[in-house]
Image (cartoon, rainbow, N blue to C red):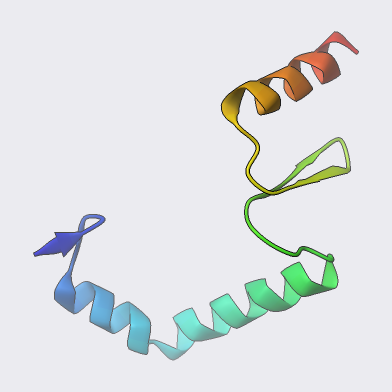
Length: 68
């Protein structure tokens, strides 16, 4: 059985890897230091957007930034 293209063995190896755990811990620490409180958190030109922004909201933000 494969999940996300990975076999059960590959998933087991990832979940037991000290390198993977260290990377996850480093990412979590960096997110905390940046004040992130959840996912997804998006940044557009330094402006932070938290939570579930739908496609149209993200699209309108990007279009407004591009229009300048």
